[in-house]
Length: 92
Image 1 (cartoon, helix red, strand yellow):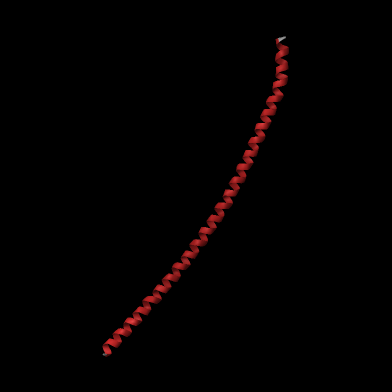
Image 2: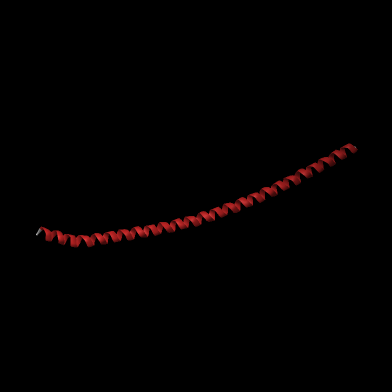
């Protein structure tokens, strides 16, 4: 009698355990796919941020070069004005 009860319990428990394991594996697989998609999205975001930072750095370098050029022009204009002032002052 005991063997019959054990056999019937095993006949009912094994399919239920298999079903539970299948459900858990399916959920785990879905989570892994979801995480994989999230990682892909993060890679794309990081790539776009990196590109934006590179563009900003290039723009900053161009602005710095323009500023340096304008500063050289300003210094040269000041030197010319100072030379003219000294010339005029010596003529007096």
